[in-house]
Image 1: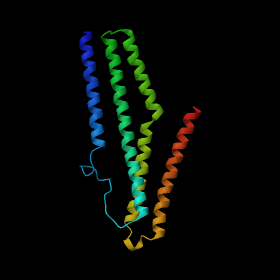
Image 2 (image 1 turned 45 degrees about the vertical axis):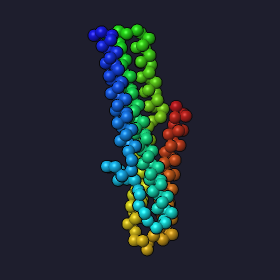
Image 3 (image 1 turned 90 degrees about the vertical axis):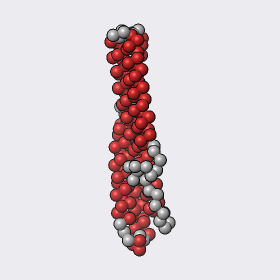
Image 4 (image 1 turned 30 degrees about the vertical axis):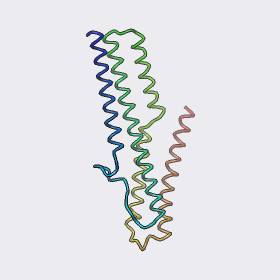
Length: 180
């Protein structure tokens, strides 16, 4: 295999990776109202600050989940491409410093993946979003006349418990990293 062919193949692999990332970004950032966008709330209801607060918190976790998933998948694709390019560079016998640079790049990407741990953020955000959604659903099942201050306080207490759990999980992860 010639060097020129190897570089062309590496360029194609990188191009495909970039297209995959762009497609993923488009899927996660489409306009509200498009297909499969059922989780976003756009409902006109009488003023209910507790419900509004809960929906904002749901939206926060939902957006955080999407961003973490996108970042995790982008790093995975980048790691795959850099690793493939390293193997390809070694196979076509390019300069040693090019192969070494690609190998070092794959180590850096793997390190970024471990440091930022977006897989864990994705899972934690998905769990938090589903817990917030369950609290919202329970509240919305109440008839309008039963949505008293006590019911609103109960909804907010559930949301605050989820936030405390999420903050505690973040603190534990941070402490584990600082001790390692």
